[in-house]
Every structure is written in C-alpha cells, then in structure tokens.
Image (cartoon, rainbow, N blue to C red; front, side, top):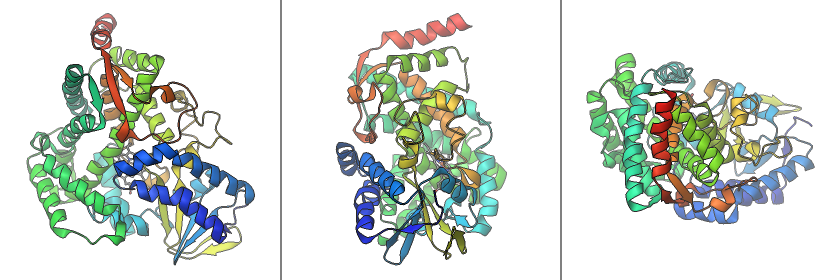
Amino acid sequence: MTDTPVDLTTSETGRVLRDVLGPLVAQGAIVRRPAVTAWAERRQVDRRARRLLRELRDRYDGAPLVVRLGARRLVLAVHPEHVERILDGSPDPYTPASWEKRGALAHFQPDGVLISSTADRRTRRPFNEALLDMRQPVHADGDTFTAVVDREARDLADGVERSGRLDWDTFAAAWWRAVRTLVLGSSARDDEHLSALLDALRRDGNWSWFRPRRPWLQAGLERRIAEHVAVAEPGTLAARGRDVGGADAVRGQIPHWLFAFDAAGAATFRALAVASARPEVRERIVTELATSGRGPSVLPYGRGCVLEAVRLWPTTLAVLRDTTREVRWGTRAFPAGTGFVVLSAFFHRDGDRLAFADAFEPEAWLDGRADADWGIVPFSAGPVSCPGRNVVLLVASHALARLATLDLTVSRGRYLADDPLPCTVDHLGLRFGFRSGALARGDVGVARARAA
Ligand code: HEM
C-alpha cells in the first residue's frame, strides 16, 4: 500500500463520475429525490460504485485516488488509515466546511456548526456537545424524549392496525410530530408548515451553489423557529439551549438538528424493515423493550439494529473535508482548498476487510468491533463526529422497539430476510402490511408484568 495519491486517467474519472459521484448527487445529498432513489435501488447503484472503487484500489496499490472536476480536485480515501488521518485531522487541516457543504447547507442553516469558520466552531461545537449530551447514552431530557416517542408511536401503531398498512409518508408524518415536539416543544408538534419550509430549502440545498438563495423562505423558517423557541417547555432541546446559551445561539443550530432527524427516521424505518423480515431480530428487539423497565432505558440491541441500518445503508453518503492549508501525502503536496472524500457506502461494506460486510450484525456494535474500525463511520469520527449520535440512538431505538411490537410484513421481505443484504435500499419505497396486532403489543405488557 502507498499513501501517495494517484491521479485517475480521464476515462477512470468518467467512470467514477458515472458510477460513484453521479448517482450520489442525483439521489440528493441534502434531501432525497424519490424518483431517483427508486431508480438507485433498481440499479443497486452502491454495488456498482463499490466494484469500481475496489478495482481502482487494487490497480493503484491502495493509493488515495485523485479526481479532477474542472478546477476542483477531490482525493478519495480507499483505506481506513486514510479515513483516520482525515477525520482525526478535522477541523484543521481538514475542515468539514467544504465548498460543496457550504453551498448546500447555507440555504437553510448558515449558522450551523458544520459549516462554521474555525473561529465560530470554537463556541458552537461545545455548545452542540453540551446541549445534545454527546457523551451520555441517555440525554438529561431522555425521559421527555422517550415519552414523546412512545405517544406518537402508539398513535401510529393504532393507525396501522386500523388501515393494515404502513408506508414512508405515514411513518414520516408521525416521526416529524415527535421530532418537532422534542426539539421545539408542543407548540411545534403540528407545525407542518415549518417542516415544509425546511424541505423547500433543503431541496435548494441539493443544488448547492447552483441554486440562488431564497432569503424570504429562510427568514420564514427562522421566524417560526424563533416563535417556538420562545415558548418551548422544559424537557425540549430548544428550552435547554435557550437556558444555556441564549435564544439566538440555539436558533442557529436548530435547522441542522431538524434536518438531521430525517436521517434518523430513515435508519429507524430500514431497521424496522429488517426486523419485520427476520422474526428472531424482531423478537429480540421486543423482548429487550419489555424487560428494560419504563422510561428512557438503554436498549443496546435496538441501538445495534439502528447502527446496522446506518452502516449498511449510510445516510451521510459522503463525508467531505477541505484542506485549510497545504498537506503532504506521501511524496505529494496538496494546497489549501483541496477536497478529501470518505465514501461511507464503500467502506462500510468492504468485503476485503470486514467478515460481516453484507450481513446484519448488531453484535458488531455490542462487542466494539464496529466502533474500533476507522472504516465504519456512519456518524463520522474524530473531533467533528456527530454530537447527536446518542440522542439519535435513544430516540430511534425506542421508536423501533415500539413499532416492532406490531406484527408487520415488509414489501422487500425476501431480500431482507437473509444475508447478504442488498447494497441499496430505498427507504422511501418500503411498504409494510399488518399481519396481526394481538401478538406483540399484548406481549410487551405481559413480559413487562413478568419482569416487574
Ligand atoms: C441517523 C442520524 C444521523 C446520522 C447518521 C448523522 C451523521 C452525522 C455525520 C456523518 C456528521 C459529520 C458530517 C460531516 O463531517 O460532514 C454529523 C454531524 C453533525 N450531526 Fe449528525 N447525524 C445524525 C443525526 C443527528 C441529529 C438528530 C442531530 C441533532 C439533534 C445531529 C447533530 C449533528 C451536528 C450538530 C453535526 C455537526 C458537527 C460538527 O460540525 O462539529 N445529527 N452527523
């Protein structure tokens, strides 16, 4: 293996554009485009991308791959050692505020920590870490969060029992009610207009610098957030932020939190799909909830399932960095402003290195194998890793466990029932049917009574 990056030829660059970067951009980096994600699943685009990157890694003896796109130069990592160097070296000399991300995220979260200058990051990063209780498996307001999730999941489950169906739109409506409540308080629970504004701006974000800003929409979003922050009740992230750093400081971070909960919903829905296709997985999830006691308990297996969903089908398609100054790799130097890219879907399913690459293996998170591997980075890693990870795992594992108590069938069941799992799964296209209700929902109560 060599760590001196190698320039790809014109034809190799064309193939990387066609099979790797093109599908990634087309699906929508900031908000997914349903028609394209459906196409991506039919084509299993991640399998093609993976095949090509493996071929290039072998051809160039493991050297990072340099792709030139006009004036822009992107260096693609192909080994975990490269990932470690880039992510551990963040935010300086590898800033997360890359050119593409600044263009995309400034549409709706210009003050978010992710695209902040190094100076602003010094206050915004610790602020995020503190408010999100980054290092605690259970957030200080975890009891409120799980109570909100329980309530919305119960309503959703009742609806599924009545209709006999569950699709993404139905799930997402309930998910966003829960998210708006735990982030902004009960005044925001039904504020679908706020979510619509954010969605419109996220769609602009998909086009990064190539779509003009719509300041009036952004102002509308900020106004609504400010109104909710002003009245948010204790137990919400907004109230905590308002009390710790002031209303202005927390308002600037909220668009990112709301946006990022979309990924948590996708992971929950995919994990539910696997659980519905695998009785033994579902049973373990339900039993864990039943025996865990009330409140915001840690559900290690449920968390492992959510983590597997983001490992197998990463929601952050590429982790991007720009260099803040010249960096040397092997015998080459790269100037400030060079892009470095970690393609999560490639690393997470690297069959050359991982015995469980295409398997559903929550145990890999329980025994530490996954976290120890620099190639497995669904929440990124190093000093710029996701400070929301534990909040996500708490909320998503409880939502998953509640919904797994329903006896569901899933439309992609035969592909999800066994390993190897498909490389691309379009969560927007997942559809569930309802087998029977009595079984599991009753069982949770019974098991809980037994455990008590
Ligand atoms: C499944 C759900 C989520 C996944 C997979 C995820 C993943 C990530 C990743 C990969 C990054 C680094 C991005 C980069 O370096 O370009 C990140 C950053 C971040 N995430 Fe998450 N995230 C999720 C949900 C959340 C939630 C719900 C919150 C807040 C409540 C959150 C808060 C943040 C923040 C504030 C950053 C920026 C950190 C910084 O710039 O220092 N995330 N997340």
